[in-house]
Length: 576
DNA sequence: GCCGTTTTCGGCCCGACTGTTTTCAGTCG
Image 1 (cartoon, helix red, strand yellow):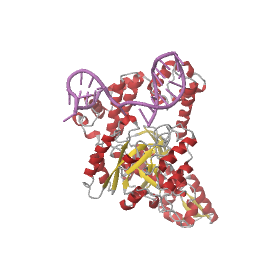
Image 2: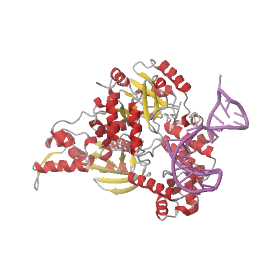
Image 3: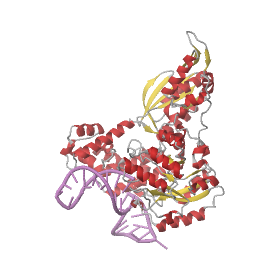
Image 4: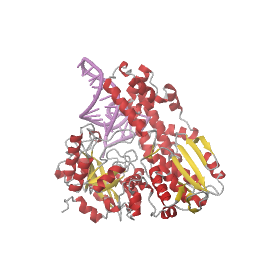
């Protein structure tokens, strides 16, 4: 299920981590990290490459290529196994807690025998961390905060991982003879930002072949439940996948039921009861014993029988969609097909993996009408940006613009919003960009007032068009900054600055509820990929999911607009 | 370990922040 490149990426990353933990050469560790990233972002499948071809991937040399080759041949990497034998795997998990890196993880293991996150939490609560040199009260506190953040994520998996797995299961089962329909449901269909497990629904006259095919999938590690209507498995990565097979005539009711949400379903059932009906996963029935089945075959029929239009899954949270449906005022939700361009992307001039030409070719293949290159600005020092490099890139962009018949290439940048709300360059230099995204990359700990002021000031900058990943949260890893979002939204609406819905699966920032709120205050949005490789240009599908959950229409999203209209927005004259 | 209009060795994204130190190591972006 995971692309082989992702598997290899994970192994190389693990190898790099183990080198760091065991105190190996930091540059060697970095080399493997770099290779891991490069393999993950490489457009070509590594399975089709020999050692020579693997070395064609930038950052992959002889040694790494041989290790990958070994893995493709034998399914294991000896050197990695040797490293694994040295240290419990839990130490690497401990390293995953914010503020804990390889050195601290090792110190905790050596000093206290901490070999798992649970043991770390226990030691921190018991006040034992102080026994290890370099740890004090504050660090124990921050470690516990980090663990809590992870606990809140609750072992849920990212939407990208879940989607890939779900699509693979659906494709495999759809190919089984006798399978009439198959789709995934649950929170994933509602486009929630993470998934706890994966629900797959299928119809067939005979469920046995489907169940057999399901449990035989190569990545199934354990069969949790095996029955005629429901089978649950766990993958090697620990993800639970449930398959339910229903008769073809019950597809619609089952799909409604298993898509949820629970709150939405409860509302539907209550409406059914009020109408003298009964709704279950088996259909909509007349109430009472032996009540006749009215409809069940399609979602549309079920909703219609309750007096509702079909409701898009991302809206099914009982947050007003039922009422809107009854009034026939459901929004025409924005879709991925509505997107005419991407306004936040990177190249290898900063921390992207692919050169400009490769990103442009991939963008053009997506059918975009416009595409902005927005590499990092100099205040993010590690990216080593200079005026000269940026201007040289601009010259190249101007040259390449026009190479693609239907796609306009825009030159932009991702600015850094400083603690006081200032950005990297003075107005004169900024004026040379077609589009400027401005984002917070530092000073995450400012207090609410300061954080709000800095973002408002960034909005007020006439050269800032989009606020990138506005809350800077990383799902399950970093809490959002403390900021008065309403104040910032008002500033956006007032100044004609768009809020980004960053489609990177670990960000999804703004999130659904903020989107809803911002829209009500008159804010416009940009759904961007923040791509650091050609593959990540597909990220907007997740951002679109968030936008749909927030009830956005194409009108709300500036990168669904024609270039003519977007161009006017980018001149940022306050509307009068 | 990778890489070279610095080319087969000697570099490797650099600076800020944090908490612990009493001069700095570790982590992060």
